[in-house]
Image (tube, rainbow, N blue to C red; front, side, top):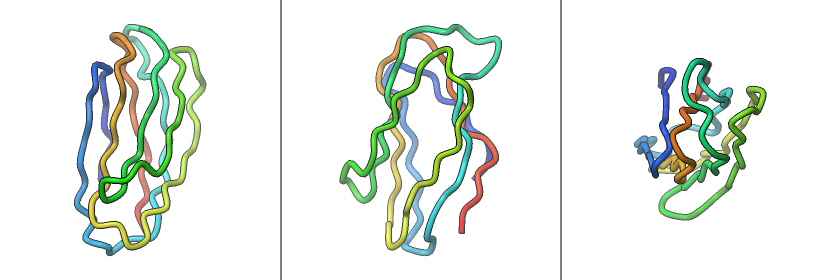
Length: 95
């Protein structure tokens, strides 16, 4: 997994993990020089079930998050409509 950018307006990404991993650590934050837009929520779905919701503010400092993916076949990240802000996942580590 590499660094990714997600723009609001119900953007999503799917990762097929095939049950091979235990956790994902990464940093999430607003991407500099992009529109601030409105606050939004990152939904973390594991095998079709909502596992966690993380509120995101346009003026937030980057924060570390850990996602438990033990036994998960498919991970889906959904950035709910928050205007025109762009958020990014950086420094991902998958183990």
